[in-house]
Length: 139
Image (cartoon, rainbow, N blue to C red; front, side):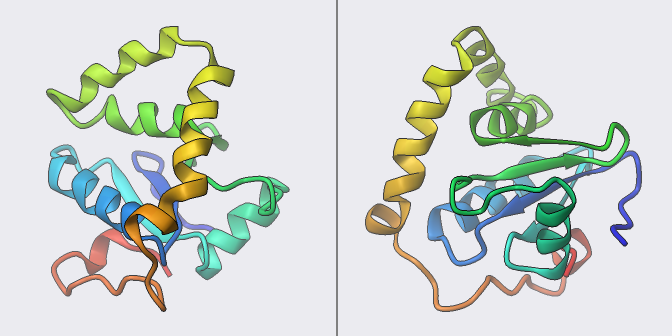
């Protein structure tokens, strides 16, 4: 059972991707309202949400944003922009990209996602958060 406070949202990310891990650290540093929790897609929580929303992991090469309050999931560019809007200036300015049609935003997103290991590398195992960040991560 996924137990996430209704005032939080859960960011699911590829735990072995260097770009994804850097992005998580970027969000943590700018999450002044403590809005987000994190879990690797490869974790038990990640697998539970993937199963709950019947997400095809073969075709979904994406960050996922789970909102327990509305029981909804966002993926790809929509997830990234919804995350950015909570991060303050200048990150929150990315909301202007909502005017770009989703299929175009997702084409760019998918191109980056497809090449992320080649461009940024890959870890052997999921990131282990430091003790001070542990409270932001679910297993």
